[in-house]
Image (cartoon, rainbow, N blue to C red; front, top):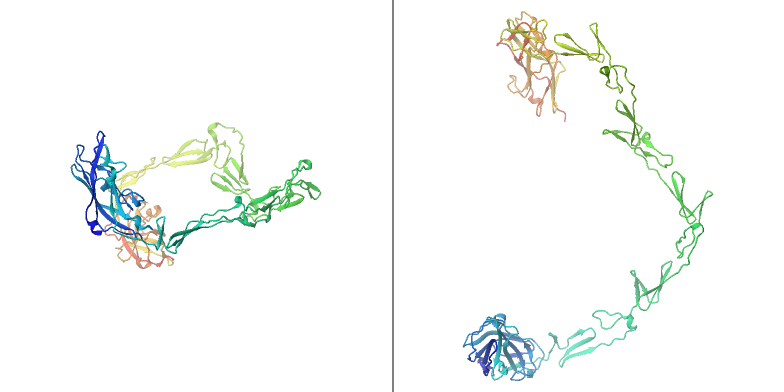
Length: 628
Protein backbone atom coordinates (compact mmCIF):
# COMPACT_ATOMS: atom_id res chain seq x y z
CA UNK A 1 0.00 0.00 0.00
CA UNK A 2 3.08 2.35 0.05
CA UNK A 3 2.43 3.46 -3.55
CA UNK A 4 -0.80 5.07 -2.33
CA UNK A 5 1.21 7.44 -0.08
CA UNK A 6 2.67 9.25 -3.16
CA UNK A 7 -0.76 10.54 -4.15
CA UNK A 8 -3.00 13.11 -2.81
CA UNK A 9 -5.52 11.70 -0.34
CA UNK A 10 -8.78 13.58 -0.60
CA UNK A 11 -11.85 13.72 1.57
CA UNK A 12 -14.55 16.02 0.33
CA UNK A 13 -16.52 17.76 2.94
CA UNK A 14 -20.06 18.90 2.41
CA UNK A 15 -20.98 22.51 2.36
CA UNK A 16 -22.92 23.97 5.26
CA UNK A 17 -24.27 27.47 4.94
CA UNK A 18 -23.93 29.60 8.06
CA UNK A 19 -25.49 33.08 8.05
CA UNK A 20 -26.30 36.03 10.32
CA UNK A 21 -22.97 35.62 12.29
CA UNK A 22 -20.67 38.59 12.65
CA UNK A 23 -17.49 36.57 11.90
CA UNK A 24 -15.27 35.37 9.08
CA UNK A 25 -16.73 31.97 8.01
CA UNK A 26 -14.40 29.43 6.42
CA UNK A 27 -16.53 26.63 4.91
CA UNK A 28 -14.64 23.75 3.29
CA UNK A 29 -15.88 20.72 1.39
CA UNK A 30 -12.51 18.94 1.06
CA UNK A 31 -9.06 18.70 2.73
CA UNK A 32 -6.01 17.03 1.24
CA UNK A 33 -2.87 15.52 2.90
CA UNK A 34 0.36 14.88 0.99
CA UNK A 35 3.18 12.97 2.78
CA UNK A 36 6.77 13.93 1.91
CA UNK A 37 8.27 10.61 3.04
CA UNK A 38 7.21 7.02 3.67
CA UNK A 39 4.96 6.51 6.69
CA UNK A 40 6.90 3.57 8.17
CA UNK A 41 6.55 3.39 11.97
CA UNK A 42 9.46 2.22 14.22
CA UNK A 43 8.20 2.27 17.80
CA UNK A 44 11.73 1.73 19.18
CA UNK A 45 13.29 4.83 17.57
CA UNK A 46 10.36 7.05 16.64
CA UNK A 47 10.13 8.86 13.33
CA UNK A 48 9.88 12.34 11.82
CA UNK A 49 7.95 13.03 8.63
CA UNK A 50 6.58 16.03 6.86
CA UNK A 51 3.38 16.45 4.86
CA UNK A 52 1.49 19.05 2.91
CA UNK A 53 -2.05 20.16 3.64
CA UNK A 54 -4.73 21.78 1.49
CA UNK A 55 -8.34 22.81 2.15
CA UNK A 56 -10.75 23.33 -0.76
CA UNK A 57 -13.41 25.94 -0.12
CA UNK A 58 -16.89 25.88 -1.56
CA UNK A 59 -17.87 29.17 -3.12
CA UNK A 60 -20.65 31.00 -1.32
CA UNK A 61 -21.95 34.50 -0.77
CA UNK A 62 -19.82 34.82 2.37
CA UNK A 63 -16.64 33.69 0.60
CA UNK A 64 -13.93 36.39 0.78
CA UNK A 65 -10.20 36.87 1.60
CA UNK A 66 -9.13 35.94 5.17
CA UNK A 67 -5.80 37.16 6.61
CA UNK A 68 -4.25 37.74 10.04
CA UNK A 69 -2.18 35.70 12.52
CA UNK A 70 -2.73 32.55 14.61
CA UNK A 71 -5.61 31.57 12.31
CA UNK A 72 -5.37 27.83 11.61
CA UNK A 73 -4.70 24.71 13.63
CA UNK A 74 -3.76 21.20 12.42
CA UNK A 75 -3.65 18.39 15.03
CA UNK A 76 -2.07 14.93 14.43
CA UNK A 77 -2.15 11.45 16.06
CA UNK A 78 -2.16 7.69 15.45
CA UNK A 79 -5.24 5.56 15.94
CA UNK A 80 -6.88 2.21 15.08
CA UNK A 81 -10.00 3.50 13.27
CA UNK A 82 -10.31 5.10 9.85
CA UNK A 83 -12.45 7.98 11.15
CA UNK A 84 -9.86 8.91 13.86
CA UNK A 85 -12.06 7.94 16.79
CA UNK A 86 -10.88 5.89 19.73
CA UNK A 87 -7.54 6.09 21.55
CA UNK A 88 -5.21 8.79 20.14
CA UNK A 89 -1.54 7.72 20.35
CA UNK A 90 1.19 10.38 20.01
CA UNK A 91 -1.40 13.18 19.89
CA UNK A 92 -0.03 16.71 19.08
CA UNK A 93 -2.61 19.49 19.37
CA UNK A 94 -0.88 22.06 17.11
CA UNK A 95 1.56 21.01 14.38
CA UNK A 96 1.74 24.40 12.68
CA UNK A 97 4.39 27.04 13.24
CA UNK A 98 3.34 30.66 13.82
CA UNK A 99 4.08 31.44 10.17
CA UNK A 100 2.10 28.44 8.91
CA UNK A 101 -0.79 29.28 11.23
CA UNK A 102 -1.00 32.73 9.66
CA UNK A 103 -1.19 31.65 5.99
CA UNK A 104 -3.80 33.88 4.29
CA UNK A 105 -6.76 32.51 2.38
CA UNK A 106 -7.45 34.09 -1.01
CA UNK A 107 -10.99 34.38 -2.22
CA UNK A 108 -12.18 31.58 -4.53
CA UNK A 109 -8.93 29.65 -3.97
CA UNK A 110 -7.74 26.85 -1.71
CA UNK A 111 -5.82 27.18 1.58
CA UNK A 112 -2.43 25.43 1.27
CA UNK A 113 0.07 24.77 4.10
CA UNK A 114 3.27 22.88 3.23
CA UNK A 115 6.15 21.48 5.28
CA UNK A 116 4.14 20.47 8.36
CA UNK A 117 6.40 18.42 10.71
CA UNK A 118 5.18 15.61 12.96
CA UNK A 119 7.58 13.78 15.30
CA UNK A 120 6.72 10.35 16.70
CA UNK A 121 8.64 9.79 19.98
CA UNK A 122 9.97 6.31 20.88
CA UNK A 123 7.27 4.41 22.75
CA UNK A 124 6.12 0.94 23.70
CA UNK A 125 2.83 0.33 21.90
CA UNK A 126 1.07 -2.20 19.69
CA UNK A 127 1.09 -1.71 15.95
CA UNK A 128 -2.55 -2.87 15.90
CA UNK A 129 -3.39 0.36 17.80
CA UNK A 130 -1.59 2.55 15.22
CA UNK A 131 -3.03 1.45 11.82
CA UNK A 132 -3.98 5.02 10.80
CA UNK A 133 -2.31 8.46 10.96
CA UNK A 134 -4.95 11.15 11.36
CA UNK A 135 -5.04 14.95 11.11
CA UNK A 136 -7.77 17.40 12.03
CA UNK A 137 -8.17 20.88 10.60
CA UNK A 138 -9.68 23.80 12.45
CA UNK A 139 -9.01 27.23 13.87
CA UNK A 140 -6.99 28.20 16.92
CA UNK A 141 -8.56 29.26 20.21
CA UNK A 142 -7.64 32.92 19.63
CA UNK A 143 -7.39 33.71 15.91
CA UNK A 144 -6.31 37.28 15.08
CA UNK A 145 -8.28 38.20 11.95
CA UNK A 146 -7.18 41.35 10.12
CA UNK A 147 -10.79 42.56 9.80
CA UNK A 148 -11.16 42.41 13.57
CA UNK A 149 -13.84 39.68 13.74
CA UNK A 150 -13.75 36.05 14.85
CA UNK A 151 -12.89 33.07 12.62
CA UNK A 152 -14.94 29.85 12.51
CA UNK A 153 -14.37 26.70 10.42
CA UNK A 154 -17.36 24.58 9.25
CA UNK A 155 -17.77 21.36 7.30
CA UNK A 156 -20.58 19.85 5.24
CA UNK A 157 -22.58 17.75 5.99
CA UNK A 158 -20.96 17.78 9.47
CA UNK A 159 -17.62 18.52 11.16
CA UNK A 160 -16.47 14.92 10.83
CA UNK A 161 -15.19 15.72 7.38
CA UNK A 162 -12.58 18.02 9.01
CA UNK A 163 -10.68 14.89 10.13
CA UNK A 164 -8.61 12.91 7.59
CA UNK A 165 -6.84 9.56 8.34
CA UNK A 166 -4.22 7.74 6.22
CA UNK A 167 -3.48 4.05 6.62
CA UNK A 168 0.05 3.19 7.90
CA UNK A 169 1.60 0.59 5.58
CA UNK A 170 4.35 -0.70 7.88
CA UNK A 171 4.87 -0.76 11.70
CA UNK A 172 7.69 -2.31 13.73
CA UNK A 173 7.14 -3.16 17.38
CA UNK A 174 10.01 -3.47 19.94
CA UNK A 175 9.56 -5.67 22.98
CA UNK A 176 13.23 -5.24 24.10
CA UNK A 177 12.60 -1.86 25.75
CA UNK A 178 10.32 -0.27 28.31
CA UNK A 179 9.28 3.37 28.17
CA UNK A 180 8.26 5.08 31.41
CA UNK A 181 7.62 8.84 31.67
CA UNK A 182 9.47 9.36 28.38
CA UNK A 183 12.57 7.41 29.51
CA UNK A 184 13.66 4.26 27.57
CA UNK A 185 14.92 1.26 29.58
CA UNK A 186 16.44 -1.92 28.11
CA UNK A 187 15.14 -5.34 29.20
CA UNK A 188 16.81 -6.19 32.54
CA UNK A 189 17.28 -2.57 33.63
CA UNK A 190 15.96 -1.48 37.04
CA UNK A 191 15.00 1.95 38.39
CA UNK A 192 13.13 3.54 41.28
CA UNK A 193 10.32 5.93 40.31
CA UNK A 194 9.66 6.28 44.07
CA UNK A 195 11.86 5.51 47.13
CA UNK A 196 9.51 2.66 48.09
CA UNK A 197 8.88 1.34 44.53
CA UNK A 198 11.48 -0.51 42.41
CA UNK A 199 10.73 -1.39 38.75
CA UNK A 200 12.38 -3.78 36.23
CA UNK A 201 12.03 -3.85 32.43
CA UNK A 202 11.04 -7.36 31.18
CA UNK A 203 10.06 -8.76 27.79
CA UNK A 204 6.49 -8.62 28.94
CA UNK A 205 6.70 -4.98 30.06
CA UNK A 206 7.48 -3.09 33.25
CA UNK A 207 7.28 -5.04 36.55
CA UNK A 208 7.36 -3.10 39.90
CA UNK A 209 7.59 -4.13 43.58
CA UNK A 210 6.75 -2.05 46.65
CA UNK A 211 9.05 -2.13 49.74
CA UNK A 212 7.34 -2.64 53.11
CA UNK A 213 8.64 -0.74 56.20
CA UNK A 214 8.74 -2.11 59.79
CA UNK A 215 9.99 0.75 62.04
CA UNK A 216 11.21 -0.15 65.56
CA UNK A 217 9.96 3.05 67.25
CA UNK A 218 6.75 4.96 67.56
CA UNK A 219 5.45 7.21 64.81
CA UNK A 220 6.34 10.36 66.79
CA UNK A 221 10.01 9.34 66.90
CA UNK A 222 10.45 8.18 63.31
CA UNK A 223 12.94 10.09 61.13
CA UNK A 224 12.21 10.41 57.43
CA UNK A 225 15.02 11.11 54.93
CA UNK A 226 14.56 12.38 51.37
CA UNK A 227 15.20 9.57 48.88
CA UNK A 228 14.90 6.81 51.55
CA UNK A 229 11.75 4.68 51.70
CA UNK A 230 11.61 3.57 55.35
CA UNK A 231 11.97 5.90 58.35
CA UNK A 232 14.82 5.47 60.85
CA UNK A 233 14.67 5.55 64.65
CA UNK A 234 16.98 7.72 66.83
CA UNK A 235 20.10 5.99 68.20
CA UNK A 236 21.57 8.93 70.15
CA UNK A 237 21.14 12.51 71.31
CA UNK A 238 23.24 15.29 69.78
CA UNK A 239 23.90 18.11 72.27
CA UNK A 240 26.29 20.97 71.40
CA UNK A 241 28.35 18.74 69.10
CA UNK A 242 28.47 15.80 71.60
CA UNK A 243 26.73 12.45 70.97
CA UNK A 244 25.02 10.57 73.82
CA UNK A 245 23.57 7.03 73.50
CA UNK A 246 19.88 6.39 74.22
CA UNK A 247 19.51 6.10 78.01
CA UNK A 248 22.85 7.84 78.81
CA UNK A 249 22.96 10.63 81.46
CA UNK A 250 25.37 13.59 81.85
CA UNK A 251 25.89 16.67 84.01
CA UNK A 252 25.48 19.97 82.16
CA UNK A 253 26.45 22.12 85.15
CA UNK A 254 26.31 21.87 88.95
CA UNK A 255 22.54 22.38 88.87
CA UNK A 256 21.49 20.51 85.69
CA UNK A 257 21.53 16.77 84.82
CA UNK A 258 20.22 15.42 81.48
CA UNK A 259 19.22 11.99 80.07
CA UNK A 260 18.97 10.90 76.41
CA UNK A 261 15.42 9.62 75.72
CA UNK A 262 14.32 7.13 73.05
CA UNK A 263 13.05 10.06 71.00
CA UNK A 264 16.63 11.26 70.54
CA UNK A 265 15.97 14.32 72.65
CA UNK A 266 17.59 15.23 75.97
CA UNK A 267 15.42 15.52 79.11
CA UNK A 268 17.04 17.73 81.75
CA UNK A 269 16.31 18.25 85.48
CA UNK A 270 17.39 21.45 87.27
CA UNK A 271 17.99 21.38 91.03
CA UNK A 272 15.80 23.76 93.03
CA UNK A 273 17.52 25.87 95.74
CA UNK A 274 15.90 27.12 98.94
CA UNK A 275 16.08 30.87 99.76
CA UNK A 276 19.25 31.83 101.71
CA UNK A 277 19.39 34.72 104.22
CA UNK A 278 22.77 35.90 105.54
CA UNK A 279 23.36 37.93 108.76
CA UNK A 280 24.36 41.57 108.55
CA UNK A 281 22.65 42.03 105.23
CA UNK A 282 25.43 40.17 103.40
CA UNK A 283 24.59 38.71 100.00
CA UNK A 284 24.81 34.90 99.48
CA UNK A 285 27.45 33.53 97.10
CA UNK A 286 27.58 30.40 94.97
CA UNK A 287 30.80 28.48 95.54
CA UNK A 288 32.55 26.60 92.75
CA UNK A 289 31.16 23.05 92.36
CA UNK A 290 27.97 23.87 94.26
CA UNK A 291 24.55 24.56 92.80
CA UNK A 292 22.88 26.52 95.59
CA UNK A 293 24.18 29.78 97.14
CA UNK A 294 25.51 30.02 100.72
CA UNK A 295 26.55 32.81 103.09
CA UNK A 296 30.15 33.98 102.46
CA UNK A 297 32.89 33.75 105.11
CA UNK A 298 34.83 36.71 106.57
CA UNK A 299 38.60 37.25 106.30
CA UNK A 300 41.00 37.91 109.23
CA UNK A 301 44.08 39.96 108.29
CA UNK A 302 46.33 40.48 111.32
CA UNK A 303 43.37 40.77 113.67
CA UNK A 304 41.21 42.91 111.37
CA UNK A 305 38.05 41.33 109.96
CA UNK A 306 36.97 42.07 106.41
CA UNK A 307 33.69 41.17 104.74
CA UNK A 308 33.35 39.21 101.52
CA UNK A 309 34.47 41.34 98.52
CA UNK A 310 35.84 44.06 100.84
CA UNK A 311 39.12 45.63 99.66
CA UNK A 312 42.01 47.18 101.64
CA UNK A 313 45.72 48.04 101.34
CA UNK A 314 48.32 46.39 103.52
CA UNK A 315 50.86 48.99 102.36
CA UNK A 316 51.37 51.40 99.48
CA UNK A 317 52.22 48.55 97.07
CA UNK A 318 49.94 45.73 98.32
CA UNK A 319 46.16 45.66 97.60
CA UNK A 320 44.01 42.87 99.11
CA UNK A 321 40.43 41.64 98.81
CA UNK A 322 38.39 39.18 100.88
CA UNK A 323 36.76 36.39 98.90
CA UNK A 324 34.67 33.95 100.98
CA UNK A 325 37.19 33.72 103.82
CA UNK A 326 40.25 33.78 101.55
CA UNK A 327 42.57 36.80 101.34
CA UNK A 328 43.74 37.54 97.81
CA UNK A 329 46.48 40.16 97.43
CA UNK A 330 48.19 41.82 94.46
CA UNK A 331 51.64 43.40 94.82
CA UNK A 332 52.39 46.28 92.46
CA UNK A 333 55.77 46.13 90.70
CA UNK A 334 57.50 49.38 89.86
CA UNK A 335 59.05 49.67 86.39
CA UNK A 336 62.38 51.44 85.85
CA UNK A 337 61.94 55.13 85.10
CA UNK A 338 63.51 56.77 82.06
CA UNK A 339 64.32 60.02 83.83
CA UNK A 340 66.86 61.41 86.25
CA UNK A 341 66.25 60.94 89.99
CA UNK A 342 65.90 64.69 90.37
CA UNK A 343 62.95 64.60 87.97
CA UNK A 344 61.13 61.79 89.86
CA UNK A 345 58.23 62.44 92.26
CA UNK A 346 56.32 60.12 94.59
CA UNK A 347 53.21 60.84 96.62
CA UNK A 348 52.83 59.74 100.24
CA UNK A 349 50.24 57.10 99.27
CA UNK A 350 51.90 56.08 96.01
CA UNK A 351 53.80 52.80 95.62
CA UNK A 352 55.99 53.85 92.70
CA UNK A 353 57.71 57.04 91.77
CA UNK A 354 56.98 58.61 88.42
CA UNK A 355 58.69 60.97 86.06
CA UNK A 356 57.44 64.47 86.64
CA UNK A 357 55.90 66.30 83.72
CA UNK A 358 57.63 69.21 82.02
CA UNK A 359 56.23 72.70 81.96
CA UNK A 360 55.63 74.61 78.73
CA UNK A 361 55.82 78.42 78.76
CA UNK A 362 55.89 80.47 75.56
CA UNK A 363 56.98 77.41 73.49
CA UNK A 364 59.85 76.70 75.90
CA UNK A 365 60.09 73.50 77.97
CA UNK A 366 61.26 73.43 81.60
CA UNK A 367 61.92 70.26 83.69
CA UNK A 368 60.38 69.60 87.08
CA UNK A 369 61.95 71.87 89.73
CA UNK A 370 63.38 74.35 87.21
CA UNK A 371 62.93 78.11 87.70
CA UNK A 372 62.83 80.80 85.04
CA UNK A 373 61.76 84.37 84.42
CA UNK A 374 59.45 84.88 81.47
CA UNK A 375 59.97 88.64 81.99
CA UNK A 376 61.82 90.89 84.41
CA UNK A 377 58.87 91.08 86.78
CA UNK A 378 57.89 87.40 86.90
CA UNK A 379 59.59 84.36 88.44
CA UNK A 380 58.22 80.84 87.74
CA UNK A 381 58.92 77.34 89.06
CA UNK A 382 57.86 74.05 87.42
CA UNK A 383 56.18 71.40 89.57
CA UNK A 384 55.09 68.25 87.71
CA UNK A 385 53.86 70.06 84.64
CA UNK A 386 52.35 73.03 86.49
CA UNK A 387 53.98 76.48 86.32
CA UNK A 388 53.82 78.41 89.61
CA UNK A 389 54.63 82.09 88.95
CA UNK A 390 54.98 85.18 91.17
CA UNK A 391 55.04 88.87 90.16
CA UNK A 392 57.46 91.35 91.80
CA UNK A 393 55.92 94.28 93.76
CA UNK A 394 57.16 97.80 92.83
CA UNK A 395 57.13 100.90 95.09
CA UNK A 396 56.10 104.38 93.88
CA UNK A 397 58.80 106.78 92.49
CA UNK A 398 59.44 110.27 93.96
CA UNK A 399 60.21 112.24 90.81
CA UNK A 400 58.32 113.88 87.94
CA UNK A 401 56.76 111.49 85.44
CA UNK A 402 59.06 112.60 82.61
CA UNK A 403 62.07 111.65 84.76
CA UNK A 404 60.79 108.10 85.42
CA UNK A 405 62.52 105.31 83.47
CA UNK A 406 62.40 101.52 83.49
CA UNK A 407 65.91 100.23 82.91
CA UNK A 408 66.63 97.14 80.78
CA UNK A 409 66.66 93.97 82.88
CA UNK A 410 64.84 95.62 85.80
CA UNK A 411 61.18 95.26 86.71
CA UNK A 412 60.38 98.41 88.66
CA UNK A 413 60.62 102.01 87.35
CA UNK A 414 63.16 104.44 88.92
CA UNK A 415 64.14 108.10 88.73
CA UNK A 416 66.48 108.74 85.79
CA UNK A 417 70.11 109.83 86.29
CA UNK A 418 71.52 113.13 84.95
CA UNK A 419 74.60 113.64 82.73
CA UNK A 420 77.78 115.74 83.04
CA UNK A 421 79.48 116.89 79.84
CA UNK A 422 82.36 119.33 79.50
CA UNK A 423 81.66 120.72 82.98
CA UNK A 424 77.94 121.18 82.26
CA UNK A 425 75.15 119.24 84.04
CA UNK A 426 72.19 117.98 82.05
CA UNK A 427 68.93 116.36 83.15
CA UNK A 428 67.49 113.20 81.62
CA UNK A 429 66.31 113.84 78.02
CA UNK A 430 68.23 117.20 77.73
CA UNK A 431 69.87 117.81 74.28
CA UNK A 432 72.93 119.89 73.17
CA UNK A 433 75.51 120.17 70.32
CA UNK A 434 79.18 119.54 70.99
CA UNK A 435 80.33 120.43 67.40
CA UNK A 436 78.77 121.25 64.03
CA UNK A 437 78.44 117.57 63.06
CA UNK A 438 77.03 116.05 66.24
CA UNK A 439 73.92 116.29 68.44
CA UNK A 440 73.96 114.87 71.99
CA UNK A 441 71.26 113.78 74.45
CA UNK A 442 71.26 112.71 78.10
CA UNK A 443 69.58 109.30 78.54
CA UNK A 444 69.47 108.15 82.18
CA UNK A 445 73.07 109.15 82.88
CA UNK A 446 74.35 108.07 79.46
CA UNK A 447 75.41 110.65 76.83
CA UNK A 448 74.18 109.67 73.36
CA UNK A 449 75.63 111.62 70.42
CA UNK A 450 74.56 111.33 66.77
CA UNK A 451 76.76 112.56 63.90
CA UNK A 452 75.32 114.25 60.82
CA UNK A 453 75.35 112.39 57.49
CA UNK A 454 76.90 114.31 54.62
CA UNK A 455 76.78 113.69 50.88
CA UNK A 456 80.10 113.72 49.00
CA UNK A 457 80.19 116.67 46.59
CA UNK A 458 80.97 116.09 42.93
CA UNK A 459 83.98 118.40 42.34
CA UNK A 460 85.68 119.49 39.13
CA UNK A 461 88.79 117.99 37.55
CA UNK A 462 91.17 120.09 39.65
CA UNK A 463 88.95 120.50 42.72
CA UNK A 464 89.54 119.24 46.25
CA UNK A 465 86.95 118.19 48.81
CA UNK A 466 87.42 120.27 51.99
CA UNK A 467 85.52 120.96 55.22
CA UNK A 468 85.30 124.62 56.07
CA UNK A 469 85.64 125.80 59.65
CA UNK A 470 82.31 125.85 61.50
CA UNK A 471 80.66 123.62 58.94
CA UNK A 472 79.86 119.93 59.23
CA UNK A 473 79.74 118.67 55.65
CA UNK A 474 82.56 118.87 53.02
CA UNK A 475 82.51 121.06 49.96
CA UNK A 476 84.57 121.46 46.78
CA UNK A 477 87.74 123.49 46.84
CA UNK A 478 90.05 123.94 43.88
CA UNK A 479 93.40 122.08 44.24
CA UNK A 480 96.31 121.19 41.92
CA UNK A 481 96.26 117.80 40.15
CA UNK A 482 98.62 115.09 41.32
CA UNK A 483 99.46 112.13 39.02
CA UNK A 484 101.18 109.08 40.50
CA UNK A 485 102.77 106.19 38.60
CA UNK A 486 102.80 102.60 39.95
CA UNK A 487 105.83 100.55 38.90
CA UNK A 488 105.14 97.21 40.57
CA UNK A 489 102.14 95.27 41.85
CA UNK A 490 102.78 92.00 43.66
CA UNK A 491 101.41 89.53 46.20
CA UNK A 492 103.46 88.46 49.21
CA UNK A 493 102.73 85.08 50.89
CA UNK A 494 103.91 83.84 54.25
CA UNK A 495 105.99 80.67 54.18
CA UNK A 496 103.05 78.70 55.67
CA UNK A 497 100.43 80.12 53.34
CA UNK A 498 98.13 77.53 51.71
CA UNK A 499 95.18 77.76 49.37
CA UNK A 500 92.48 75.90 51.35
CA UNK A 501 89.74 74.59 49.08
CA UNK A 502 86.24 74.08 50.49
CA UNK A 503 82.89 72.84 49.16
CA UNK A 504 81.29 76.30 49.61
CA UNK A 505 84.26 78.70 49.96
CA UNK A 506 88.03 78.51 49.40
CA UNK A 507 90.31 80.71 51.57
CA UNK A 508 93.62 82.48 50.79
CA UNK A 509 95.61 84.87 53.02
CA UNK A 510 98.19 87.26 51.43
CA UNK A 511 99.70 90.80 51.57
CA UNK A 512 99.27 93.08 48.50
CA UNK A 513 102.20 95.56 47.83
CA UNK A 514 102.32 98.39 45.26
CA UNK A 515 105.48 100.45 44.42
CA UNK A 516 105.42 104.00 42.98
CA UNK A 517 108.07 106.37 41.54
CA UNK A 518 108.67 110.12 41.83
CA UNK A 519 106.25 110.68 44.71
CA UNK A 520 107.28 114.11 46.01
CA UNK A 521 104.56 114.65 48.61
CA UNK A 522 102.36 112.50 50.80
CA UNK A 523 98.88 111.63 49.55
CA UNK A 524 96.21 111.33 52.25
CA UNK A 525 92.43 111.04 52.22
CA UNK A 526 89.70 108.40 52.15
CA UNK A 527 88.47 105.93 49.59
CA UNK A 528 91.69 106.26 47.58
CA UNK A 529 92.54 102.76 46.29
CA UNK A 530 90.77 99.74 44.81
CA UNK A 531 91.93 96.16 44.13
CA UNK A 532 90.51 93.00 42.48
CA UNK A 533 91.85 89.43 42.88
CA UNK A 534 91.13 86.21 40.92
CA UNK A 535 92.48 82.69 40.30
CA UNK A 536 93.72 81.67 36.87
CA UNK A 537 95.11 78.61 35.10
CA UNK A 538 97.56 80.73 33.04
CA UNK A 539 100.28 83.19 34.03
CA UNK A 540 98.69 86.08 32.06
CA UNK A 541 95.48 85.81 34.08
CA UNK A 542 93.29 85.42 31.02
CA UNK A 543 91.14 82.64 32.54
CA UNK A 544 89.27 83.96 35.54
CA UNK A 545 88.20 80.86 37.45
CA UNK A 546 87.05 82.91 40.45
CA UNK A 547 87.14 86.67 41.04
CA UNK A 548 86.56 88.87 44.09
CA UNK A 549 86.06 92.62 43.54
CA UNK A 550 86.72 95.51 45.97
CA UNK A 551 88.64 93.33 48.39
CA UNK A 552 90.01 96.30 50.41
CA UNK A 553 88.53 97.36 53.70
CA UNK A 554 87.81 101.04 54.41
CA UNK A 555 91.11 101.24 56.29
CA UNK A 556 93.14 99.67 53.46
CA UNK A 557 91.44 101.89 50.86
CA UNK A 558 92.49 104.97 52.86
CA UNK A 559 96.17 103.99 53.28
CA UNK A 560 98.45 107.06 52.92
CA UNK A 561 100.98 107.17 50.06
CA UNK A 562 104.19 108.60 51.59
CA UNK A 563 107.30 109.77 49.73
CA UNK A 564 108.89 106.37 50.44
CA UNK A 565 106.99 105.33 47.27
CA UNK A 566 105.48 102.03 48.54
CA UNK A 567 101.96 100.99 49.61
CA UNK A 568 101.80 98.01 52.01
CA UNK A 569 98.16 97.15 52.67
CA UNK A 570 98.87 94.51 55.30
CA UNK A 571 97.49 90.91 55.58
CA UNK A 572 94.31 90.31 53.61
CA UNK A 573 91.96 87.26 53.75
CA UNK A 574 89.85 86.46 50.68
CA UNK A 575 87.10 83.85 50.32
CA UNK A 576 86.65 82.47 46.79
CA UNK A 577 83.48 80.83 45.52
CA UNK A 578 84.67 78.07 43.18
CA UNK A 579 82.40 75.43 41.60
CA UNK A 580 84.02 71.96 41.88
CA UNK A 581 87.46 73.33 42.96
CA UNK A 582 90.54 71.28 41.99
CA UNK A 583 94.12 72.25 42.87
CA UNK A 584 95.45 71.11 39.49
CA UNK A 585 93.38 73.83 37.74
CA UNK A 586 94.27 76.71 40.15
CA UNK A 587 97.88 77.62 39.24
CA UNK A 588 98.09 81.45 39.59
CA UNK A 589 96.76 84.22 41.83
CA UNK A 590 96.28 87.53 39.96
CA UNK A 591 95.55 91.05 41.28
CA UNK A 592 94.62 94.35 39.57
CA UNK A 593 95.31 97.70 41.29
CA UNK A 594 93.71 101.08 40.63
CA UNK A 595 92.02 104.17 42.05
CA UNK A 596 88.56 103.87 43.58
CA UNK A 597 85.53 105.28 41.79
CA UNK A 598 85.12 108.16 44.28
CA UNK A 599 88.57 109.30 45.44
CA UNK A 600 88.56 111.74 48.39
CA UNK A 601 92.17 113.02 48.46
CA UNK A 602 93.17 115.86 50.77
CA UNK A 603 94.15 119.06 48.92
CA UNK A 604 94.82 117.51 45.53
CA UNK A 605 93.06 115.89 42.61
CA UNK A 606 94.59 112.42 42.41
CA UNK A 607 95.21 110.63 39.06
CA UNK A 608 96.93 107.36 38.09
CA UNK A 609 99.41 107.56 35.22
CA UNK A 610 98.21 105.56 32.17
CA UNK A 611 101.61 103.88 31.95
CA UNK A 612 101.34 102.45 35.46
CA UNK A 613 101.82 98.77 36.20
CA UNK A 614 98.43 97.69 37.61
CA UNK A 615 98.31 93.85 37.27
CA UNK A 616 100.46 90.85 38.14
CA UNK A 617 100.02 87.05 38.60
CA UNK A 618 101.90 84.96 41.15
CA UNK A 619 102.04 81.13 41.33
CA UNK A 620 99.59 79.65 43.83
CA UNK A 621 101.29 78.54 47.05
CA UNK A 622 100.68 75.09 48.47
CA UNK A 623 97.11 74.00 47.56
CA UNK A 624 95.05 71.56 49.64
CA UNK A 625 92.11 69.76 48.00
CA UNK A 626 88.81 69.08 49.74
CA UNK A 627 88.89 66.07 52.06
CA UNK A 628 86.51 63.30 50.96
